[in-house]
Structure formats: structure tokens, C-alpha cells
Length: 333
Figure 1 (cartoon, rainbow, N blue to C red):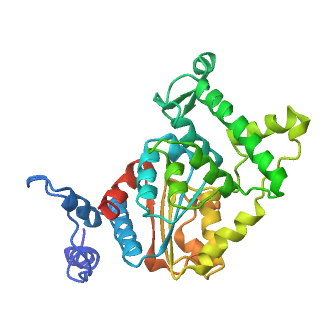
Figure 2: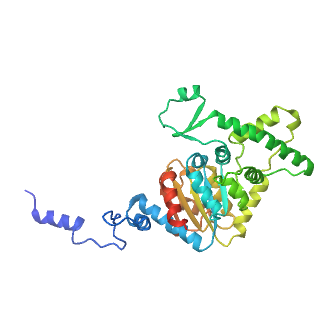
Figure 3: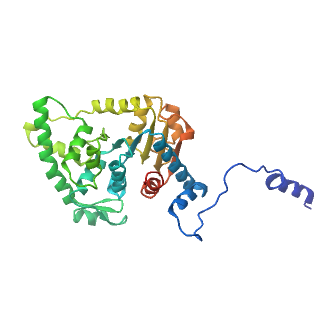
């Protein structure tokens, strides 16, 4: 027969009288019974719990970055530019709300392609073989027809020829950031990230600039005509420049959309100053595989790439969903 006294003692121990009330805000979602106010809606994220609260924390950290006028590094992968985040990033660059950009080759070339022809909404499940037969490339649920790449190559071949001519005249080998700045001066589309980066003198670093269509075009430029064989790109000088920006800053902050080398390159530049003061990661990657793409901010603290845990946050979310909300909450004026 069950001893009722022992049952009561066990219940009280596990769930009842011996519990201690924790300190903290009450968990509560946004009240849609009221007249909708977007600012209050965003504030409610902080006390919603789960990743909503991490996003709320990210918004507050981004506000602090701006209040303290820290040098903000914005790092993003090419798929962010494939998507409509391209216009969100361009908004920040246009209004000088970020100070340094770090991206991939795709993050450069796809912005330039979109100044010529738009990308098209597609389907994650569209059959690859059928798309290939139609000359359509798929990035998630975004379609990029081959003619976008053809137009980009038509644009790039004379552009590279001009660079090579200047290289020969001056003896100066251009860095990736200098090439991107010159690309930005060639386009006239105010939706372009690099149009505004050039106009506002915001540096763009891309040490893997050959890992994409730009690299393919450089190959054809050099291999198809021996006269172009001496064309070069300097990646060493940009390393000096990105680190010196961090060293010269009183405070720095990182906003990283995704992972891979853009994340590490940004954090590593801040290693030289004892770590970035702030960091916001937005990614769906996890740390179990041991790659930097999925690493938490606290792992970067162990390397000296971030200064401390209290001024960092990782939002486990699709950046195409979370980043516009972050911008709305911390950067929209």
C-alpha cells in the first residue's frame, strides 16, 4: 500500500513549498487585442521566450552599438543578397549605419547582376534536371536564369581589361576591396549595396573573391588571351586594412548573417584588438560539428575574438526572417 505521507513529501520537494521564485521578467506574448503598434510588438519579443527573446536581445544590443557609435562590421553570405535582404543591407549602407562589409564573391556579383535583371521567386522543390534544361539556376526558392550570368560576364570582361590597363600603367595590383569599390562606381542602381558602399566610402572585404562567377570570369579573361596573363588580385593588403580598422576603433561590433569564412574573417580581424565589444549572430547552424559556422559567441570568447558574453547573442533563426525585424527595431529612423 502507498504511503500517502511520503507521496506528499515527494510532491512538495519536487514541485511545491520548497521552490524559490526566480528573478526575471514575466513571460508574456504580444496582446493582439489592443490596437496594433509595431514598436510594442517588437518589444514583446524580449519576453516571449525561446528565440524570440534572443532576437529581442539582439535588437537591444544593436541599439547600444549605435548609441555608443561603435564601428559596426556587417558580414553576410551570398544567399542574403540572392534574397530580398539585399535591399535591407543597401538601406543600412545608404544611411551609413554600418561601417565595414564582409561578404563572399556571390554577395558581390549577385548585387551587380540585380542591377541588370531581377531574380525570380521559384520553388524549393523544383526539379533540378528540368531547371537545367531550361537554363535556370536555383538558390533555395530563388531562380536565376543563365542570362543574368551572361550579362554579368559581358559587363565584367571590359571592366577587367580596364583594371589590367591601370595595373600595367601604375604597377599597382588591386585588392578585392578596391575592385569592389570600382564596381560600385560603375553601377547607377540605388538599390545596389555597392553603389552606396562606394558613394559613402564604406569598405567591402571579400578575400574569397574568386569563389564564384567573378573567379570564373577571371579564369576566362586570363586563359583565353595570353595578353591578359599578368592580371593579378592582391589579397594580402586587404588583410592589413581590415585589421587596422579594428585596431583604430575605440569599440567594435559584429553583426553576422550566416557563417563560413565571412564570420571568421570578421572575428579574426577583431582578435588583434583583444576582441569585438559586441556581437550578434543570426544563423541556423549549430556547434556540434565543431565548425566556426555553428559556433556560439562564447566559443569566440575563448579565442579572444569577442570580449565577453554579456554583450553577445546568437539568434538561431533564418536571417531572412530575423534580420529585417532587427533592422526595424534598431536601425529604422
